[in-house]
Image (cartoon, rainbow, N blue to C red; front, side, top):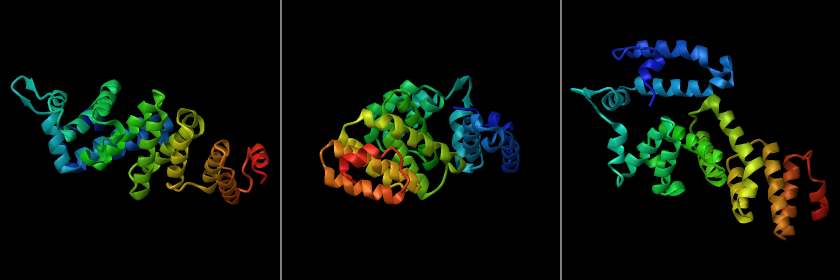
Length: 258
């Protein structure tokens, strides 16, 4: 876990006013709109530190867990969580803790032990922590070519962001991540039925018409490959309505006689 006080450059005794001032000054220097996309992770860590320290109850918990000493003994949060394998809330926090410490394999191992995609992290983490945790998990799963799991997590993240924004200016990068995953990696990684389910879930998230048209073209191609030509024609016509200039359709037009 980052030292939030060091990240913001404030003392442990800093007032809320001091914390706000320090955050504004740091944010001006590392905001991606100013410093470029390479600072996205640094800005995210800065925001996370600010949101914890500006909230009295979260700051108190942070100080208790990470800053409290008794004699020469320091409270070991990781060990504390690991010693509670039957407590889902502790295991959810352990997953997030390991991810923040870049112990990705350890985090994934705990996530899998708790059921992977069936483990409701959102029930056991604060909303913002869940969203951060979900994004990092998706990134690590994608690196390991576990594209379907990454897709499911990213879809849930986009759905929640649509409901109530959190990532805000970072969300375009999250959406690009999802689009690239779908465009280049997902289709060969799953069977046709699963792919169609993923595409339907993607369309439910509401993206610009041109994006949706491309995904509907992929649905039509998959349906055609499966031999369901009537459904393929229907979806393909809907795709053309969304984007009359849709590219890469010559072969599909011939196959569907559209």
